[in-house]
Length: 218
Ligand SMILES: [Zn+2]
View 1 (spheres, rainbow, N blue to C red):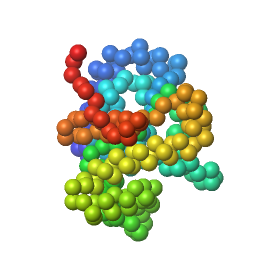
View 2: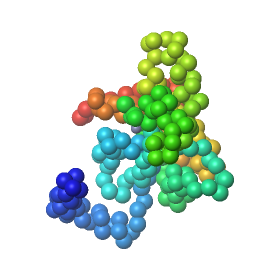
View 3: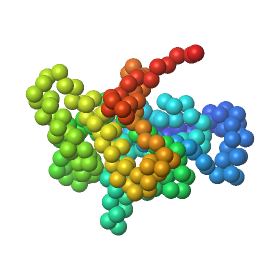
């Protein structure tokens, strides 16, 4: 199992380096508890680790990752909702100031939605993925129609961005999110990471467009 051995090598580097260097921080977090101000909702994709992209320290960021960084709509149906539980904890228990939904380029979940690869798939062959990605079917159908009319439409990127907007709209269907947004105690942000070019774009709520974040040492 060389992959697991590599993990343990990484753990040993962590214990010898970053853990020692941040010992005081870990002690404070252990005994004082966590109090992150930001929740980030990101994809499970191995290329888009939010703590790397935002260069955050332990305890600073409450992270939820799922396939295609989706927020399902609020459903008080008594069923088990793992993503909703994490959102509820961040908002009502940690009282975070911001929730950031971060999508990314070349997202496999988005590609599967566009192609319909897992629509109606058998159990064990994509059924869970297909059902999960149904959350963005309305956006997918719109973009498929637009792409059919215009060859210039980049359907993959368009759906990545549309899914972020839809997840932000779904966040507002949670009563405890809507209340805090209305009171100015919680901000919702959308972002998209380019992977190959390293560009992070952030949703401008006024224009509805995603604009690149300027970078460089000042
Ligand atoms: Zn993804």
